[in-house]
Each structure stands twice: as structure tokens, then as C-alpha cells.
Length: 435
Image (cartoon, rainbow, N blue to C red; front, side, top):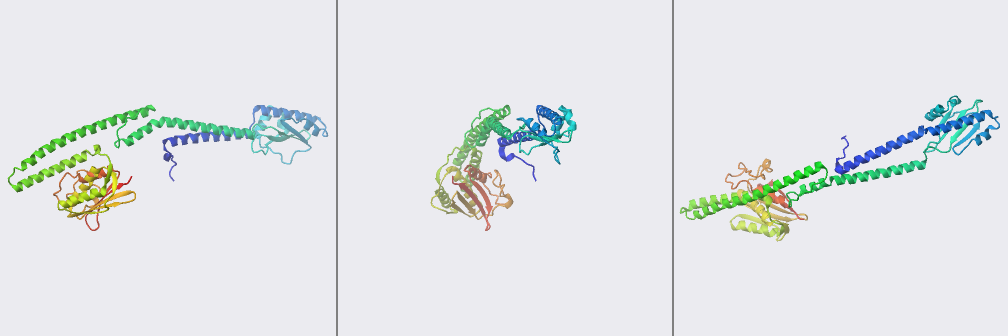
């Protein structure tokens, strides 16, 4: 059996639980100790008064004739003690409160030889005492206290006060802990939103350790934002600088007289442009300013399939005529285009299927190519990974197509997966939630 742990309650819950356990333990221990002390001991003044009363009663009853002893015992009764006399002691006199008896005997040593017997009365709560002692002629002086040191009303009041005090301590501690940890909750909220929304500076506050963490987080956030901004500017400059000479090369190829050479050079330029486009798309994914808009996914899929068919490629669309969803249209179009190009590059035909479900929209792209080894399905979506051993070596690009798809689907809050079809070929699936 595993050790007890309170981790599921959270930090505040753990602190409150610890305080609650400590207060309850203290209350229970103090109550038990007090009750046991009330059961086996009385205050010194109570023991002294009881001892004095017994000494006086003993002396008066021993001097009085037996016939008068009952009336004298009754006359000796007070509001605190009730006394009586019997010609012989009980058959089994009780003697359970030995500590109280030792206190009385210590104050009145003459009672040590009187066979003093003390017991607690049958009250559920309190310290009322009953008992007796033997007189010189063998008769029995009985007594009982009418007012105990503790009473039931006192016990109830103690419980009520202790319970209210415990609740007050727990409530105050909870408010203090919550106030202390409030800056930490702000920090957790800002860290969770970081990267998904505009950066927000966390107000520094709380204990010194939390302030230090918040200060470090704000500095880290500023450095990351500065690095992203610098990279975005660099990507924009690189994209412009790379595309400009490529455009000049394309214009100059028109002057090449050899048609085959011109086609070869044009193909190389197109490949370089595709590589630059995919690289910039992947590296600039985090700073995509596109805002989700209501888009007809079915029309988008139909358009992409028709465009591929116009280029002489075998692409089939299966699905409804209309299916609207709020997405980043350009990003989703790029993802579907990459999957179709990938399917047509390694296979002869592709089938694009759209299915509208209750809580999501499912896009499936099937091809009839060689597929991907099962052990490589997870790694193929990593950037710059190319499985040349599994597919033909005339692959175009840098191995960023599937990585771009995975990132764009993740931005939409969807899931992307690859699987080999039993009948051969590869199946790519995109599932987008219908929020």
C-alpha cells in the first residue's frame, strides 16, 4: 500500500489540510488530557476542603452516641457535600480515585488510618465524588460531593469555543495563504498564455522568492519576444534576397536556345523556389498573423482537387458540397496542398475525403504509393527528415512538408496522423474540432 499523500488537493489544499489536522489534533489531545485530569485529580483547594470536612465529620460522629449519628451526619451536609452514617461499611466499598485520596491524605494525615475510599459517581461527565471512611468503632461515614469540578455544560461550552476557534484559525490561514500565492497564480496564467496570445507583463508581488521568479519570467519573456521579432525580420530579408536572384534567373532562362536545357534550368529554379517557400513557411510559423475566419472546407477541398486535375493529376474528392468552419484559411489550404502534393509525388492517384461529424471535421488523404515503414511513421513529421530509403530519391524540398502540416493543424487545435493502408499506400488524417 502506498504512503498517504495529499498532493491531489493542490498547494493551498495541502496547507489548509495540514493546519486542520494540527488544530484538530491539538484540540483532541487537550480535551482528552483535560478530561483525564478531571477524572483522576481535583484542585488542591477542593481536596483540602473535602479533607477538612471529613476530619470534622469523623470527630463529631465518633464522639456522638450511635443513635444520634444519623441526625448529626444529616446536619453536617452542605450545599457542596452530603454525609451519611451506617453501622457497618458496604461489603465492597469502591476505591478508584487513588490520586485524589492521596491528595486528601497528604493534607489531612489523620485520615490515612481511616480506610478512606473514593470513587467517581456514575455521571457521564464531571468529577463528582462518592466514598466513605471507617470510624473507630467500625461504623461507616459516607459522603458524596454535590458539585463537581467539571460539568456537562462546561464541557459543551469548551467544545463550542474550541470548534469556533479552530474554524477561525483555518479560515484566517486559508485567506493568508491564498493572498500569498495569488502572484504565483498570475504567473502560472501568464506562462500558460505565453505563445498563444499577446505577451503580458506579470505584476511583481508576493514573497521575495515569488517576486524573483516573476522578475525572471518577465525578462525571459522579453528576450524571447525580441528573438522572435529579430528572426521575423531576418526571414523577411532572406526571403526577399533569395527570391530576387531566382526571379532574374527565371527571366534569363527565356534566352536559352536549347529547349531541353531551358526546361532543366527551369525545373531547378522551381525546386529552389519550393525549398525557399517551405523553409520560410516553417520557420515563420509562430508569427503567422492570419486570423481564423469562417471557411467552407468542402469548397476549399473541391478547388484543390480540381486544380490538381487541371494539371493532369488523378485526384478525387468525396464529401459534402458545403461544410463551414472557422479556421485559418491560408494555413489549412497549405496543409492540404502539401498532403496532396506528397500523395501525388509518391503515388499515381489520391483521394481527398471530407466527413462532418458531431464534434469535429475529418479530412482523409489516401494515396496508392509505397507507404512508410511503421517504425518511421512518428519521425517522418519531424523537420528536415526525408525517408529516401523508403521512397524514390527524386524527392523535392527539404523534408518540411509534413512538419508544416503538423504545425498548422496544431495551431487549429486539431490532430494529425499518418498510417499505412492495408491495401497499400499511405493515409493522412486531419481532425479539426468544431468549437
